[in-house]
Length: 194
Image (cartoon, rainbow, N blue to C red; front, top):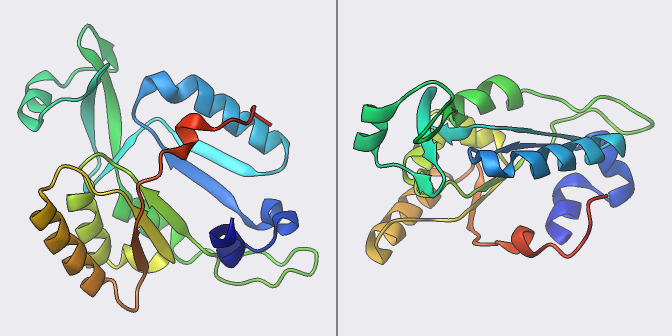
């Protein structure tokens, strides 16, 4: 909660100053995420999610019930939206998305709130793609539009993970705060939908 207050102000003003955008490639989560977005929007919170993965280029990937296929399998099995093997989902170039839709935004003047640069917090839990996506965010300077990145690192040996984290942290100085966070609390959220 303190992180949200630090970045977005107190609870009473958040509905007017904050929006949430999520990317989720697994179609099994679509009904709950759609309902969650609908209910939050009805309460005045600008919330949306895209049935898409994030990556380093705009593309398409095959998503199977158990998870992502290897890159070789994906290259061999790309098909249109749904087949017996799974779903094709779009991949959105996260750096491009941030530079186009997030960078340069300003908060509107509303009920005494001063216009200004909005705070941006990104939770990055992208099942191994962070080793490509985060360096691209830093190289394109898209990371500079993000105040704080909360990253869950996957699929690397401890040594490689440490090296990548150190390189990213060094390159993120004066640009964004990069913090490690492995938080799956959403999966055990005890509260009903609003």
